[in-house]
Image (tube, rainbow, N blue to C red; front, side, top):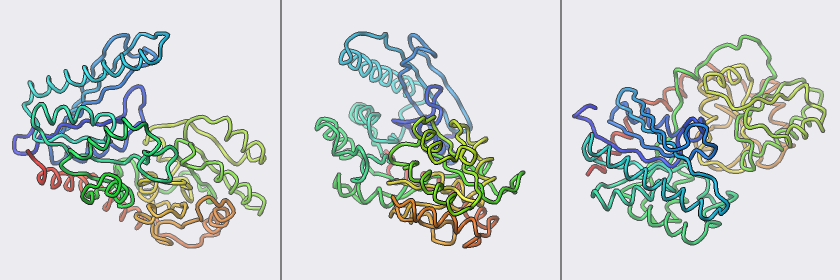
Length: 392
């Protein structure tokens, strides 16, 4: 730990772990960025429902430069009553967090600031630490739950949960978002000052421009968790229309296994053209992006869209749904093109445009620009300045 740099305790509600290796991986990248100019200690606690990692409690510590990570797994013995099980789990979660925070303070001293990443449910611990140790906290938010168009959304939560989240935001010293679109919702919903903007980052050691080993000019890729938000069904329907027009193509869909989507591909007789792949590390994911002519992101709603900047960092343009938030990071004809949201016919026409090379992209320059704009160093400096404005 460097003595002349801020000491920040991170309490994320999501974070990569052995149980969910890709859950909140963008939060971990922000932690790495922040640690370039600050001392960062992350505490993350997750329930091991299956007991694969532990049948009691297991603690793991990692250190990389000025980033320390403490990951704690806990197990609750199965029981007949779900309500009782939930109570036991919450009690264990809170007690382990309180103990971990106390141990960190005893070892390294009181942090100057708490960085709460995703307000609920780690915000309960941020509130406690704020009152118990008189440490201010700031919030970073990326959750789509605060968007009116999201399904479900904040307004579907039970009243008690809405009240807790409102309290968490009310006591925060400041709030940061990854898009102005999300910021406007938080500003209006919680009556807080306009949040500051620090966008997501892209790892230049992984995502960069490279000529594909196999030149397949009509290869596309879609990467997501394949849920309602990401609208993969309309992507498949759009490619069925492209197939009807006589164009040859390949589409790689990367995400959790979905028998429904496989059935849809089979229905349209495109099993030779559309290939499914399980979730994978970014070091493998990049090969699919670099080998594609375009990345498809046809979401119904987003707060940022990390795959946009990852594709652009590889020099690959994006075909995206025409929703307001994506205009913050995509410029028509420069790093991507837009298709009418929820309209597979229009998406198909835009896919055809990319196949035919309209518009043309300078892939190498696109990569250079993206890597500079969304670098860990840029975000790290922004975090450093933000912390200094809110230090205890």
